[in-house]
Length: 176
Image 1 (cartoon, one colour):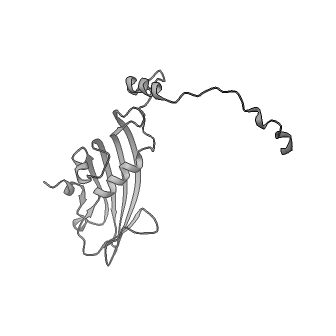
Image 2: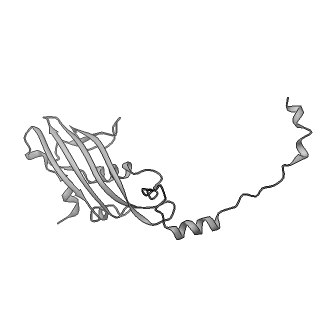
Image 3: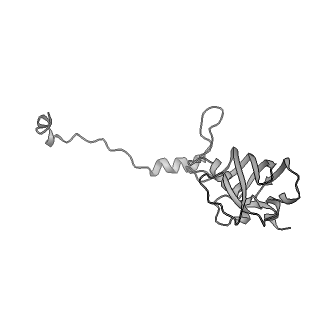
């Protein structure tokens, strides 16, 4: 089965009103996005869709963990994520993801389904922090790779204590 089809909602057969869908993201999902720095996850996505004659309104909740690389020690670890998004779909003459607000898209009236894979990928990436480091343990200590942290300390530039430069002291009174 094509992986991408797992993240499609065939809305044409749905009656007007509320519908609920559940999707699961794992390592197979990221094969759709070879440019991704993410390669594994365990994320459950709940989609609450409200169908009206000319719109689809989706409330999307993501919850789970994503395997990321630690920015400090470079080891992989699971980062917990939780994210909520709204997506409003209007019908028009042609498809367009460009709108004044990120949560609005236009879908051609000829379309029979809605592919959410790119939106899920974007939401997962948005939910991750910019700086990704191992969480601290119960004692407040870092859970980073101890050998790597030791090596970083060895190779870090040490601050050199030097005498202040007194050549400029005579000019300081001129500033006042």
